[in-house]
Length: 177
Image (cartoon, rainbow, N blue to C red):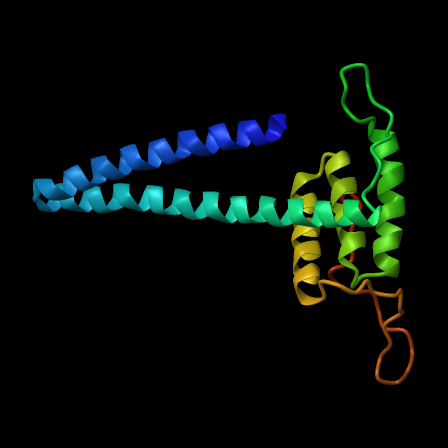
């Protein structure tokens, strides 16, 4: 709940900033000289980019939360039972151990959004936010393409019937190894 409140406060501050900057850009454009019009247009670009970025992030969070709710309803949401440091952070070794398990699950069922969701949580626990975000985006994309049926673990094969090489989208370890 605290994260939602923080997100909404930050979004509200950003929207206020966008309106303020946008109004200044319009004032510069109304001034009418070539220099002020150029600066006014340049200033208006910032709120447009900011609104787009805020919208994309809001969509991402809503979709990820919808997946979490669906996975929770199925009883497949990962349990947060990782060891923690005295400051409350997740112990890195415990996160790495869970990550290894989640990576193997995802490699076994690469077309199942549920495994990618759990992998994203494992990346986040291992403090690898960029990979966590990419894994969650993959889960969202897979959920959109097959929203109701979980994939059964299958081994992809080449046209000759032999197992195909690993997918380039295969997950990697949070340490980059």
